[in-house]
Image (cartoon, rainbow, N blue to C red; front, side):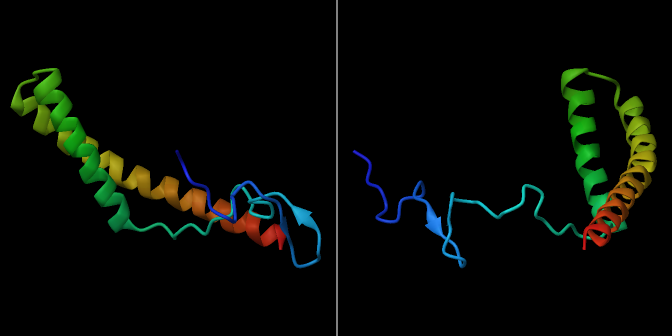
Length: 102
């Protein structure tokens, strides 16, 4: 038997204006503050991508090690800048939209 909290999460709450609103109301769906892009975060993501690439190539596809490591180098060289510039574009777009709505 499960116990419920005396302040059940399904109850409606009064807000500051005295109006009853549903739980979670007033919280925007996209209410977040993204971090600015960084080369470090892009490189860490690239390392994760490389690990997955190596595991798939060596264990699943059983590709030769030489081809795997050549592919790793090429993928890393393209993945990190691409990831950084996508993050930068999305961050600038977020800032432009938030400035326009303010």
